[in-house]
Length: 399
Ligand SMILES: Cc1cc2nc3c(=O)[nH]c(=O)nc-3n(C[C@H](O)[C@H](O)[C@H](O)COP(=O)(O)OP(=O)(O)OC[C@H]3O[C@@H](n4cnc5c(N)ncnc54)[C@H](O)[C@@H]3O)c2cc1C
Image (cartoon, rainbow, N blue to C red):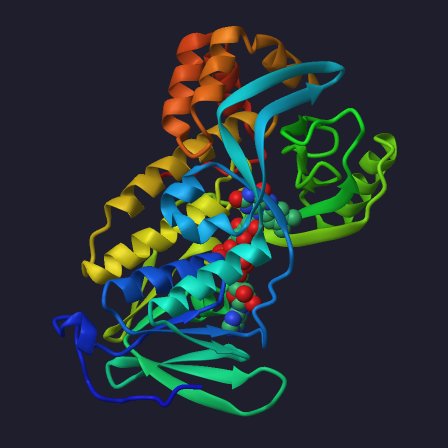
């Protein structure tokens, strides 16, 4: 645990002579923020509650945007690449070939790699330090940190805190952000079905089971992760298990957590006395609500927050991210109350030009994707509008 400092500073102080920035949560978003700040000349400490860098394993799918953001730091986490999506609903099927492959990554490897890069840039990482309290003090912020597994605690004084402690962020809550709604994501690791290629992702729309979808992403030619986004934790596991039985697949293990549901833009900064607290990743609900994918958007949130800290206020990346998140919200609202016949019509409407757009643009270019798909298949505009107008379950928001 680092010694605390109590000398006064303000935001006109040169970056290098400021108090170290405290990043709470040794997560993907946290380490990426820390790395960018350190590279920008800021002293940074990361406080992580786990005593080892041994994040739970999670097989994830991301677009190539992750590589654009992370460069070589993301490479070690890639376990597979996929070039095709197969969509199924009610006996119908459609397939989409991707112009640029998506990446299958392993979360624990990503976190370890980002931690290594952050440390290489000069970030000090403190494991076994759990955030307890945030106390405004002499124009600064005191963080009370408890040693994991013991009752000793210490204070760390700073003027800038970054909360990257996940969906149920204690830091964000202590700083006054309301707790976000969350949904359970549960996936089973399964042997890859014999009729499935390791470069293909399968997605099933079964609105009786979930307003979202099931996915099966291959992590190797032998294994994949079959998951569901549910609405209640215990129910989702039961529904997933029933789906596994239907598909004659046996779970080799499970991965699960609650992930925030994006309902409106969450301002990334709050002032506490003269200090500032920022949120990144799941802690700031930076999750695409269309697919509940939070890696790329969390990394973009991290880049935006680092930019805001380094530039003292403005961030183009955050403005772009906010626009992108709004498009995903519109898509979710349009789809959320779709019934079986709507999904059947949706899959039937995917003509060749619409599929080409889905192949050319990724989920992380939502505005371009939506625009091109609608231009190439105008029936989808009507279906989307109908979905938006009849949407009951998904809160409307002003953005
Ligand atoms: C089953 C499943 C499948 C998913 N699939 C995908 C996918 O395919 N694609 C995708 O993009 N996203 C996916 N997601 C979502 C994605 O995993 C998350 O959005 C992302 O990992 C969140 O990262 P983060 O960096 O914000 O925080 P987290 O990974 O949640 O990390 C938070 C960190 O903070 C630490 N911490 C918590 N409290 C404290 C404290 N008090 N003091 C100190 N440290 C603390 C934790 O130990 C942890 O290390 C999936 C999620 C699940 C559960």
